[in-house]
Image (cartoon, rainbow, N blue to C red; front, top):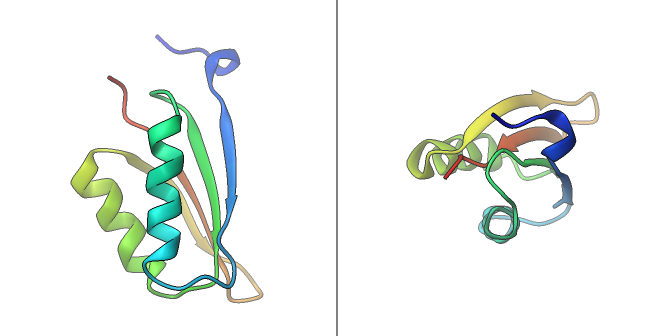
Length: 83
């Protein structure tokens, strides 16, 4: 079992970047994270609303949170799969 004290949170700001850069940077962050770690990602590219859920589904990570902010940008919380 993972406790909150063992979980790291990574912040990734991809504002201003367009596909495929947000996904490439997310993938790089996932590679350095441990299972259960969270990546909090901020994006401005509307394609991320499709790409990030697909990335998580295909690779087995959890998309714990997705929202569109008042300024039109997007916020995601991705949890790296265990193991």
